[in-house]
Length: 169
Image (tube, rainbow, N blue to C red; front, top):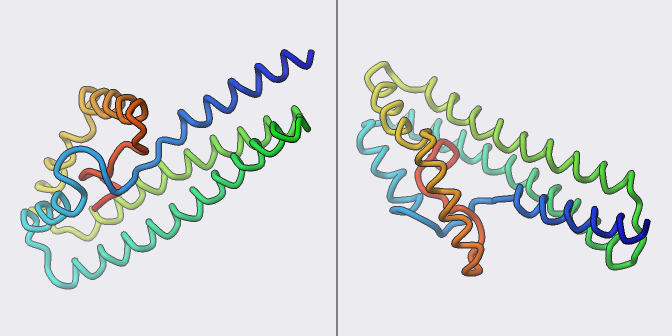
């Protein structure tokens, strides 16, 4: 029984690591600042729009930091249980479920940020904005990012990169 619980705990830990693909400031492509600046240039934002988008981005990042911190605290608690050999099955499932929900919250926040920015744009800007992000939402692009993420993990790098995307504008 103890062996079964230990194996289950190891699987849970591996899954939580895989689910926690957190962007960092390095990564693929042209980099977050260059991509963001390129999009700003294409959109020809007004100073007021730039200010509003900057505030939205600040709030989105602030919220994401809080969510990621809670995920890390939950992981730390799981590690502590393992190291102290104090395995509580109910607590493991609770923390795992909470981290899954928090990951969903991060994705929801990124989509909300994208839509909030979109609402600030005029009709011409919306067309440019949508075309720019169209190439980032395709299955082929996501598969490529996942493969790069796996390679980065194997090389000891963290995250999937913060290239241009809805939560990096």
